[in-house]
Image (tube, rainbow, N blue to C red; front, top):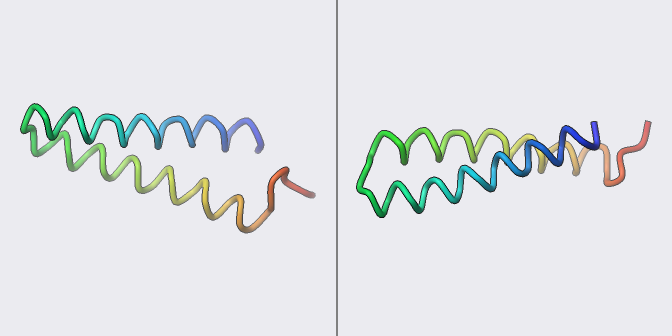
Length: 58
């Protein structure tokens, strides 16, 4: 689960970067999909860390 949280955190960060690039290009659909991806993956990482702690305990 530890590596999965890191990968999902990177996906969330790339989603945030994509939001800014989409705003620069004025692409509304890309803004929506990047925001959804960043929100879902970021929320998963935050709630996993709050629930299991970091490093995760069994």
